[in-house]
Structure formats: structure tokens, C-alpha cells
Image (cartoon, rainbow, N blue to C red; front, side, top):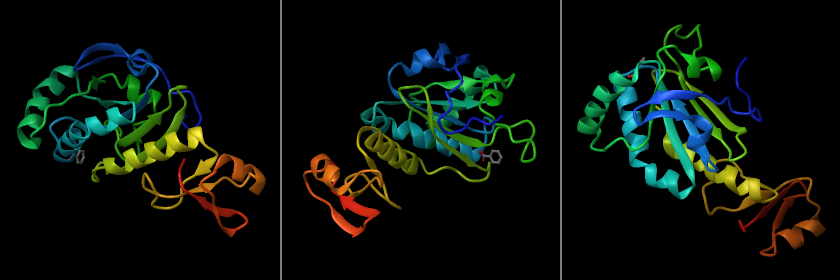
Length: 209
Ligand code: BEZ
């Protein structure tokens, strides 16, 4: 059964390029991003792992730990990391799980047999400090992911976890947000002292707190 929003993220212990680790211990009280790539020594994956390494500072700012997984073994990852560093111009600064027996891939439903029965698709799971799954995204093997979008969603998730707000289409950090419908105008005046603009009774914009 697929891992769905609101589910508890499955815990596991696995070999990684940074040694054996337990997923929950690795996450601690942080947010987490677990993302899969189909296999080692493939072109799109090479660019993706480099892109995430370059964004490590952005994930750190958001108190978010990243970890990658593929069904190749850790020894293969170590060889491949040298290619990533050479071609993408960055060191890999987060662990990559070796999952040759597909334990993690199966726990998270990362193998979609009608797409490919041996390799994972490009899955992304964002996990909150409460270990609940907050976001799932699935891309096909042929399409590299947009990691700026994943950072954008984390910004929205962290904002809306703290405030009775939601974020509109194409929202970016700093833009106005939407007051959730369950909040009355009177409550909104207290919660959002910067004020709000009512376009419709159900569509009220406020500067983010
Ligand atoms: C890639 O990373 O380039 C890739 C991996 C599996 C299938 C297709 C492309």
C-alpha cells in the first residue's frame, strides 16, 4: 500500500554512504526529505544529486535533512559519487542509502511495476518533525526534479504548520497568504494584525506573519 499524506513515515535502518543509520535518528527533530533515484551511473540522476548538494545550505536554513536512496549498493554509490563531484562541481554532502534488497523502496512504494519492475521511480517524501508524511511527489525516470519547488513546498508547509494560513498558486516565500476558511473575520483581525484583504468571503489575503 502506498505511503499517503498524514501517514507515519516508515522507519528503517540502512547502509548509506555515511555508514549505517537509522532514519528516525538521522532526522531527529528536523524536517526530512527522502528522495529516490532509479539507479547509479545514469545521467539525470547524476545532475539531480549534484543539484541537491548545491542546495544543502537552503535545506539547512529550513531545518531539513536530506537523504537519497537507490537500489544499487553503497559500494557502487561511492564510485558514482566521484563522477558526480567531477561533473557537477560539488561534493555530495548528505547520505545516499544503498538499497539492493529494495527494503526502503518497498516500504515507501517507490517501485511502480508498470513503469519499471526493478528500478525506483523518482519519489520525493517530505516528512515533518512529527514523522508524518507531509508531501509526496512522483516523477518518471526521464524527468529530473525541480528542487526549488521542493524548497518552496517546505516553506509553505512550515508556514501553514504554525499559522491558520494556506498558500495560493505559485506562492513564494514572502508573498501574501490566504486565511483558512474556518477562521472568522473577527478571529482573523486578532490573528493577523497586519490586516487582510477580502476578495470574497472565502478568499482573504494577508501578509505573512
Ligand atoms: C537517468 O537518471 O538518466 C535515468 C535513469 C533511469 C531511466 C532513465 C533515465
